[in-house]
Image: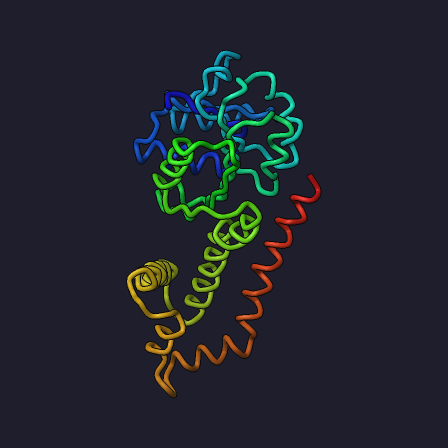
Length: 268
């Protein structure tokens, strides 16, 4: 592909374009970005990454791939404006939460469409993405879509309805981990460590734990028990988590996010 066009310029669009540029998937001159009215945002992206923000009508026709990245509330209006600007065979990659493939094809006509839920770790090539396709996506296009997402992390194909769960888990997941890190830093400082020390200790702990889960054949509960000595410090910490219903909080977090994703879809 020689030209890709982002319709929308939010944080997820930025994460993808930054990741693709870093991984040499696209050059900045091959990436075009437009949005509804925020010219300052477009200028920032141009100044920071060198992407193209001056969009002539011909670019819509020439684009090999259109990426829908606008705010979901603006999606229908944006697609109505887009429909007459693009060719009937142009492939669509949507990163819109809650906007079904059927809604996209209703607005833009029957064409190859992939829906993906990445996360902002695409910026550093470590996104966890779920992707779904409609039947118009050819084997070649499917491979192309997967290659694009694999360039900025891991991607797994799911049924479209499962994207609600993907959104709740990995799509929103970085925010949960950052929230956890905020708590670690706050309490670490309360017990006498500097913020920098806590940051170093816990980022390495999170990275090491993730790598253990990737490499080990053991289930998480087995790995947890190997760390938890009877009567020890870890057991005391686990008991406190149980006392404050940690599992119930995680369950509520994921189910609320998944339900919100479904509610957003129904409202469109």
